[in-house]
Image (cartoon, rainbow, N blue to C red; front, side, top):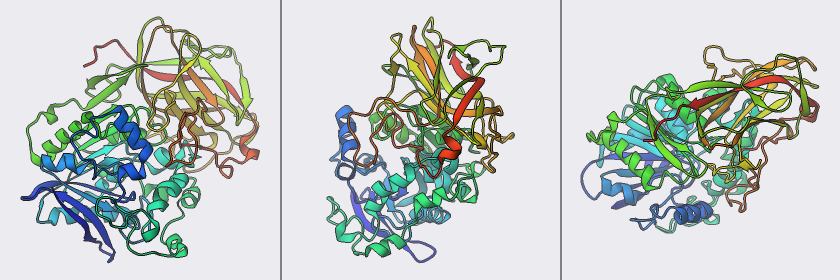
Length: 564
């Protein structure tokens, strides 16, 4: 493997970004490219030691067959890809790592940079001119955006757990501000900002300063980055700021593999499903899996899936990829996953069933005819509605939605929906989430003043809210709220119950036994995806009494079928 460090990649405004290139010694080859802010010189094991240890301890195939000296967070290991006949290019995004400039995440400027990096790689002497994009989270999210610009040399994209809607998937769940990105910025981006120089880490592989050779003063560093938390909070509605940072699905025509995580509520699921469903590409595949969000990208399972996809579209290998069914699922059980293929999403055999809320806190097949209501403190733990125990093993896989009749003692209310699984003993069953080790089945959110639906985009099983203009509540008046619940999968064992919890704040379950150094908060069921900014939820609007006057949950039941 031939390596080139800090190769200059000039942008149209004169800024020169820096890339590391890993390639076979001779010949021309297709390119796997990534562009992002986590610093190409920061080793996975150094920057993310908790995640690395967890992954290799549980999945030894990740580290096998590689020295792991070139491992980076959320991008491919060149030691496993270069021998397969690929050039691997890692670009430090503008203002991060060894690339100078102003950091403005997911902005049109960043997307244009990504476009120019793709076309630059296509022109190099070692390139066949066919470029593929691959990576997790940030390195997946920005693929949706750049694919919307249709770079001529872009031949295929693999978006692994990457959101596609800056407002709905990332910053304002149901219109409620999520504090994740402000906290993430402090822990994972500012720590590798260009200009830290000698104050930052040193790359173990080549001895270069991970964050550039210049030691810039703190005031200059601050001037070179956006106030990300402030910028997000300043745009509480789905305005042009968010649209500029989101996919334009109708423009995406490149072949794509979109891989989401059942436990990725808050960032790593909805966008993958929406991108698969709504992109204009005629060649697209959806894969859904479980476990930590950094795991299956690196396991043999994930890597071989990616390789087969790129071999077909970047090398014209007739390996049968084009004959694969469009949907590839790892159906979740309480103790394992089973693989199954399908022709469409939602699954064509889905039997939609609506279970109705009852005043005794049950979930029933038939609605109650008499009027009723139950109440809870509007920022409290809420109420849980339970089914009867299931008579036999039953699968629920797909998107879901809730329809809840609500009144509030104030002019607004935040509704947090949690889909849960309970053992016959009454104890909740939680699952290994993308980030949190103790996650429930699924989440949904809605700020009641954002209840207006986009009629053209809404589907019964996936309500779509416009988030353009708040409509305050009249205290005491009853309103119908349609709430999207992000997709889920569970084979419910006989004797278990499904629960629907309606709360006024984030779900709180068992705390994680260990914290992760790259996040600020201890995880208690929702990972870092908290909705607790007091300026977004002032008590005079959100600390009253919420009353439930009925409602239902629409669930995707799957008839018995053999897993493939």
